[in-house]
Amino acid sequence: MSINKLPPEIFTLILIEAVKEENGRPSTTASRHLLGICSQWRNLVTATANFWTNVHIVFKGNQHSVMHPVPTPNPDQVLEGLDLQLQRAGSQLIDVYLDIDVDAERAGPLFGLVFRRAPFCRWRSLELFRVNWDNYTLPITRQNDRFVNLEYMKKYHFCQPELLCLIDQTATSKLTVFRGDLSFEYMQKVCSNILSNISELELGMSTSGYGHFSPPPKVVNLTLPYFRLNDLCNVTHLKLCQAQSVTDFVKVDWTNVVSLDFVIGSQSPLPPAQQTISFPRLERLVIRGLLYVVLAYFSAPRLRCLQFDNVDYDMVQGTEGLKRLLSCSSLTLSPSEMVEILFPVNKTTLIDLIWAFPQMKRLKVHFEDDEDENEWWKHLRVEYDRWGTIKGTFCGWRNAKRTGMKGEIEAASSRPTVFMENLASLEVELKWVEGMREVWKARMVKVLEDTQDTKLKEIRCTWKGQTPLELNRSELKTGNGVPEKVL
Image (cartoon, rainbow, N blue to C red; front, side, top):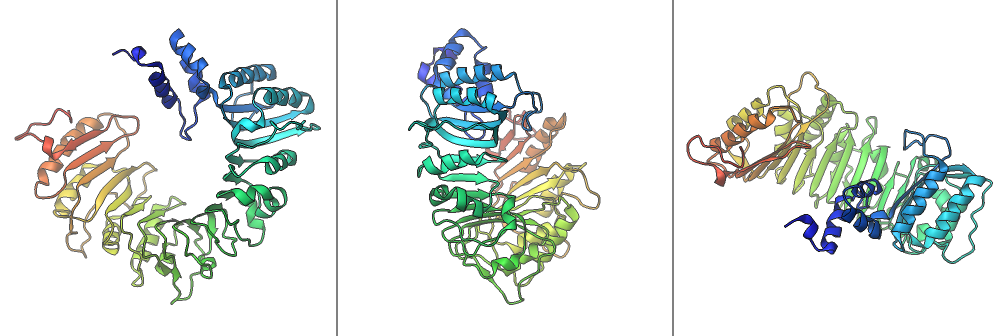
């Protein structure tokens, strides 16, 4: 059946899904492209408001936009395009991005158009990259000029205090997410109403220059540059973006926290030898940096997922930091589902990690690109004759090559063969090189043929922008035949 014979409602839903960005909002640029396909598509797209609800207002005269490296269009063209888009959006709630840096003469026509076509009461989300106008006052006089449907707000840089105050005064309990480069003290003075309702709060770098504070009672998801908290109140998800000292964690009650993501400073002092930091409900832990040994002081009996990230991209130091942690006799962490290492490690460290976390069911390692990738498969068979409680996902690492390390798996001489009998599937993510598909077709078949006595049932090879290869053991033919699905 021709796609044009689909019911209009179904066809419209398909097109809306096709133009969505990663944040779930429709791409206005993609929607405009659909207008040129044919008259039927054009009529459908122009008549459907949901294609036009993502509104970017970049209004800066003849200046260059930081987000847009080319000169912005003529102001008259901006107003004309904005007017047309807002007409097409109809009465739908809209998502607004503002980057405005103009004088009062130009700000007047812009906000006059906005008030006429899309009053603040229709704004569902607002991202403020920059909002700056000279000697201009918002003419707020009507009930429609209230942010009663605002659910999400993000502030990047400078913003007129009048606009923040208006949002704080008129926003309702629907506004639950706020992200911005503000200090908590400034928000208490200017945005106290916002703070009383939000459940997700992200504060920027300026927080570092202020004292400790307690998060608002409704906040459960909190992102900060530094740990400046008297207590955690009801926070369940905490992310700390700059280097921390783990000694700040010692006197805090972590009872409610289920997810922790933090950067550990390389010079951070360690707690006293017998000190334990207890996380009774922690399920997900991400540590970034090199001083992984601090995890030897953590107790998290419900931990499911553990991720190691090397923010300095130094493979040698990352491996050394991991080895130091794994050598600690006091290490009690044992993730029950997944361990992920976002940098390549050498063969000895990888095997030590498998032995240190016996309960994990999935191991994901970002391997260095190897000149002879076939070596990885050789070790896969020779060293791992039996598969255990690891469901492995091995991903190609795309950074520059470093000397002295290899990404292949190989059993350490000090360990017996690793027992991993329950591995059922294997996924390999690789960097695309011309001719790779033909090489890996044969490798996948060979691995399944050589592991008949294991529970390995399927292999999947993926490349970005390329069709993946998938092979299941049940599809293997006898003899030297290669299944059609692989070819």
